[in-house]
Length: 193
Ligand code: SF4
Image (cartoon, rainbow, N blue to C red; front, side, top):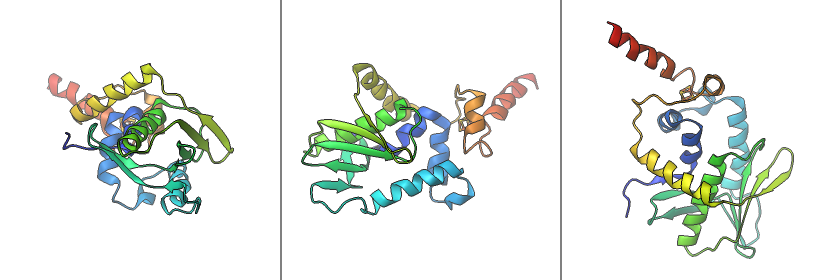
């Protein structure tokens, strides 16, 4: 039994950069236009219709349902689950690459659904802008990485610098708020003083 439930939506953030998870948690209650970059806002809007249940009125389609797993200590929301086809679908605004973070999110959703009594036979990612469907297979290697990521999230300390590339930082929506690079400099500076 876990008392520190991990939000499924945060797993992808953590795989992008562990520090971004902290910023996401701190700033999620703020006006998102103040710090979200344009692609993130578009992605949020793409998810809105799912969260508001506008995707389908069919009874076999469960949308935006809250799910959790007491066994694994994870909690979140699914996008779409088809009870007839036993199919889980996650819609993204535009998928350029199927990142591990996406697979981890879907695997977490599948674990929750199955614990709640909804079997998952198929998983799909759906890219809205170009109308492309990506069937998802989660292999043993990804499962292993998923468990490793959950345990890293549980033991993460913000004060540890993370090993992310400059390219990632320059594309990060939190770059103006984050002091990772200057943090590293400060640490070095403290040694030199
Ligand atoms: S600026 Fe870099 S280190 Fe800071 S949260 Fe973003 S990706 Fe992570």
